[in-house]
Image (cartoon, rainbow, N blue to C red; front, side, top):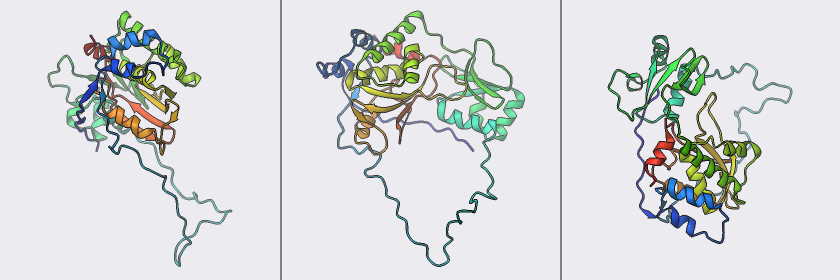
Length: 311
């Protein structure tokens, strides 16, 4: 049964503001003037944590070597070459839509979110193990509470679709709409990241940056990393059916060093990420063989969250 846990983020002492990060790299990283100006206004609350080089955050040392030992008496051996080893094995069935939706909600939504579902859909979610507090929409809601709709039909025209699972659709009925000024700030940041000669991105990832369709929390973080060392952006993964700004990025390099499983540059990157403060701190950091995957839980109005902590 899915559970919903309150997340606890460690508190870190900050040693300097964003300006200190940018100033420490003068003469080493070429950054567009617009990047410095916009970052100072939009992400001044993004801090660097105390240098914790002695803290072990790496994902491990040398890869574990697989050791093959000869079979002992009574140990089954591999099937002959002309035998299909998968014969008689039942394929793994995909999770039902309601169960897949609950898994997604546990991973992608803030812990205090609630779902308002139609009667039939609500029954399916309860049968799949939905916790009571997730579907308890009869409680009073405040201005900052996130209440999403789940329907087996089409959401309203003003809604923002977050994900689709079979015939079920999760949508935000009242998404935050960025102002013209906020959209311009996004575009300026994205253009500055792309203009930096240290940025490496394949065409598909570069197209996402050019569109500026990136969550402002994530875009601010990428801009600081670009100014600090440079980045390699491999992709902006999305959940199927997601229509909002990208909230995840796969980084495959920081500066000139690759990051990912077994790469030495991974540990310093994770230490730096763990030192960030809300709303810029990623909710999930996963080290993979392809790089480091950063992601944020859904926020209805991320531009407003960044504006609240900016001068």
